[in-house]
Length: 375
Image 1: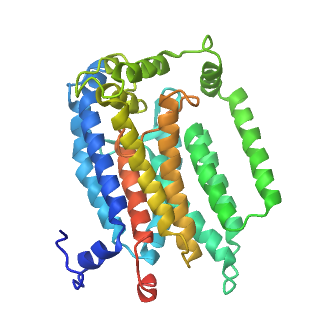
Image 2: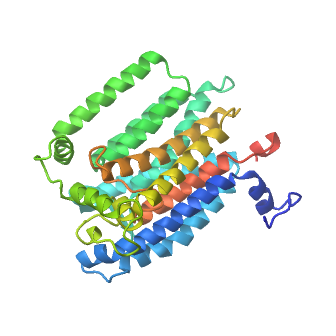
Image 3: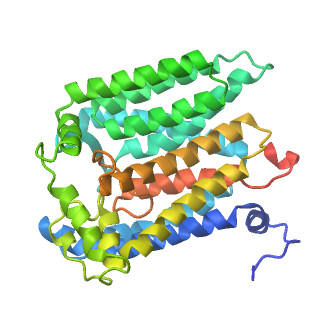
């Protein structure tokens, strides 16, 4: 039973009866799975780099309560404050991205991380949710007849800046996600079909250019299509983990593939779930992601505010696309890409950014009166 009565007019009381509790529950269960799977995968991953067995798990577990607080705290915001916080976050993240390119740490040929107070921060994780909301505001402003703001052009300019900074790292995966979300919002805002065709052509040209200009992209695509080309060690071990797990899995902590799978705690944590908990649990995890995506879309069905509709659609599409890319890569349904599984993979920046993004989604999809819309 709920601890809040429907007559409770406190902030938490109003929040409880207006927030999408099914989405909140699904996100909470995903966080729990993240804790369990991080505990399962971190000893092997930590041992390979000379750390204490549960060092990585301890670092992640410290951030889980903070992520939960960010998610709930952000979901309490009004629509206006979601917009304000997202825009300020976007501008701040752009500044940090520039600084990262200048003084960031290079790992595996990419400059994506910067150390702040002993915490390794990946700014590109935060640019995704903040840019989705900022772009939605600009698209909505362009449709507002009372304003003369060239929102579409401003959004296109901001998109160009974001993509330029991401490609300078380079980070093609984040670029693809940002591009897909922005293009989807542009389409929902009323993009002419001729421009839809133009964006598709540009996307194809961009991927072809990345194949020929970025060596790591070339290796991954070649390895996907040709088993004899490139290094397929991780994907082969990942598929082996799913075969070992079968329907019910080998049991918690009983997996062996994680001992030789370098990214078992991050990009390939879904393979750890497959080996230790089996296909049924993996399908349940997929169902949780589906709940978040479908509930998010259903809550904005018939939404009167164009900004709320575009911002929520961008956030939920981004969440679902990231999960799809991670699981698809792990199952060899697409070329591998270093992208975390939302709320499950190890990674502090990803965890906190996703909590912020999903908090904004919950805030935007709350049931509120016309008076509350402007608070």
